[in-house]
Length: 45
Image 1 (cartoon, rainbow, N blue to C red):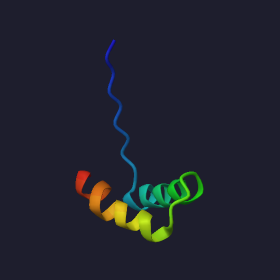
Image 2 (cartoon, rainbow, N blue to C red):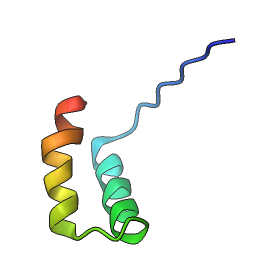
Image 3 (cartoon, rainbow, N blue to C red):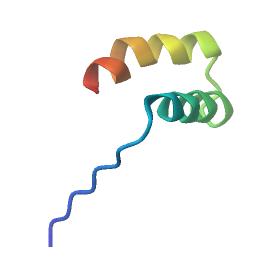
Image 4 (cartoon, one colour):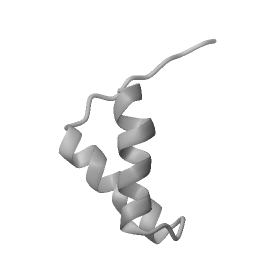
């Protein structure tokens, strides 16, 4: 069975989760997180 799930989340909540995950779990700097968000994640949205 193929199943696709789409979650509609508030943009502010998404950004907070991305910042927290990337800094804590992936050891990225806040500047690197923001750069990645503006270059990759935001355009894909």
